Length: 232
Image (cartoon, rainbow, N blue to C red; front, side, top):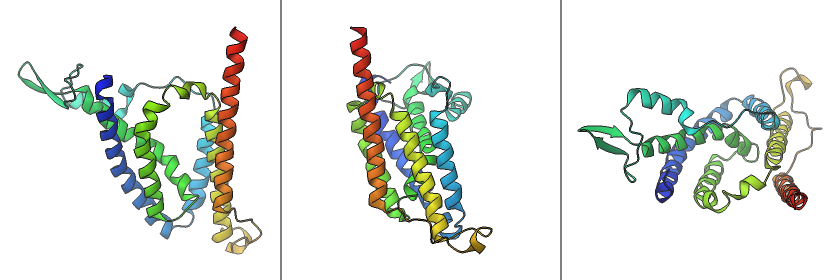
């Protein structure tokens, strides 16, 4: 995306992501209110997601590989050139979709994939749907500024992936322990809650998460400094 139009593309993608996250949060809150066993499923999913973060991965895919984008390119007439910030343009007397529209759709739909682990993670800290949605609103609105502020810094945070994996694993385990403490399982302890399992307060969870991210940041910067010194 041309730099002059990145702000508009990002803001539109954020608005689309907010709408989709709102629907996802509403459905998730309603499901959790009726099916307690979903807490165990969410917890296991977060632990598995943390494991996948530290597992060797293939090279990152290009935005053009988004399935929805590929489907749109097959169905809609798409031009390969931008026409300012316009979503459609006329080429040879024919109305065509510009890459700007595809980028906005990709931003909104790709965010929903990230929401599959971030929303269960925040449900592990609070069960209040309005707090979950408010936290997502602030996170996404802050993304617009953070994208341009720390975009170049992310390459230096080499241990950030390990930190995020540890955070997801911690919240996943907390979610499972809280569920065992509150609801229990039919085949464990006669289906009664296991009161011996410690309750992890929200403040403790916050301190653990901040501590993990701080350690990941400090070790990343220290590792980068050592590499720079070795090159000299």
